Image (cartoon, rainbow, N blue to C red; front, top):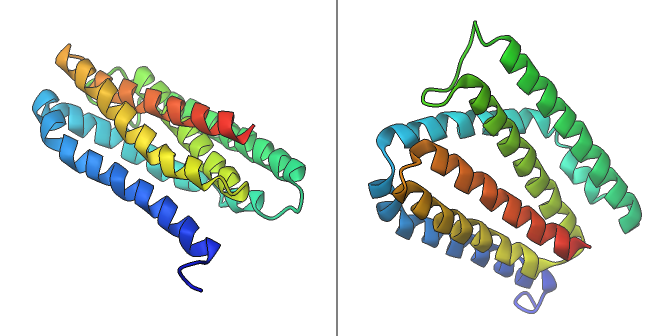
Length: 193
């Protein structure tokens, strides 16, 4: 009974996608680490880790509200409202970071304003991905959730390598990550509709 349950099949599907994507990332690390400089990895880590901390606060734990309603229509309305609220908070925080620039800066290689814009894009796209994953889960579209990490890993890798080869360094890392988030979000939106 346990092996035939839909819960077990769902968990196996979702986790296998994550494991395969992780293997792709691990196997591609030696290649990517030869293309990009240590400074690029450091700059990328500072901006994305700062953004990840901010995402934790901006998320407000509201994503779980998408699962609560009985109707998909009401769930969709909650999804849209939560996302707009989160984008508004991210925008307010980004404006605050620009205002306090003389006191605090977090970027090294790129101009500060560009770093804040990149962080804002990363935050808003990551928040959308998180909320879309919850909504897709509500719709029981396990295959979409299985494919998402694969799309993210493969598209990041396929974008990161050529951008690094042409010498974009940390900018290439940012562009590949943001474009991979765009691709994953488009995939989920297409399947959710």
